[in-house]
Length: 169
Image (cartoon, rainbow, N blue to C red; front, side):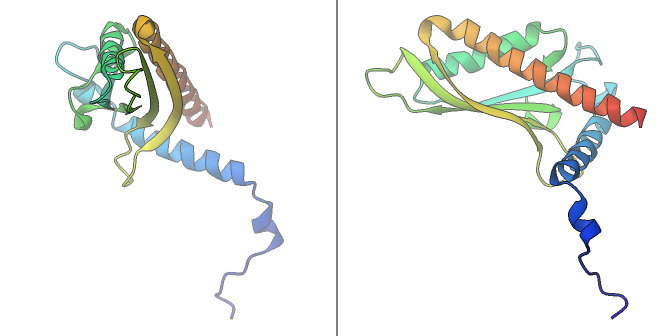
C-alpha cells in the first residue's frame, strides 16, 4: 500500500502547542482580513477602531446589566474600539453571562462569566480569545467595566502582536 498514510516518528515530533499556534495564526489572519475601513464600525467611527459587540444574559441581575451597559460606555470612549450595534458589524465580541443572584444578593453583587471572541468568516465558529469569571459589587460597577475593557485591550494587543509576527515571517 504505497499510497496509504502511516504515522511515523516524525509526525509525533510536531509539538501540539506549535500546531495550535499555527492554527491560531491562520484563524486570526482570516479574521483580520475582514477588518477594513468599509466595515470598521458605525458611521463617524475611525477606520482604526475595532468594532465590538457586547451581549449579555443578565435578566435577573441588575448589577450585571449595569456592568454590560458601563462596558459599552467604556468602549464608546475608547480610542481603540467602537461599539457595534449587532453581531454582523463586529470584529470582536464580548458576552457576559450572569449567574442568577441569591435573593439576598440581588442588587448588591453580581457573579458572571465572560467570553471574548474574534469573528472568523472562514470558519463556522468564531475564535476564542479569552474567558473568565468575575464578581462585582454594586459600588464597583464602573471599575468592573473598566477592568473588562482592560482585559479586552490586553487580548487585542496579543492578537495584533501575533498578526505582526505572522506578517514578518
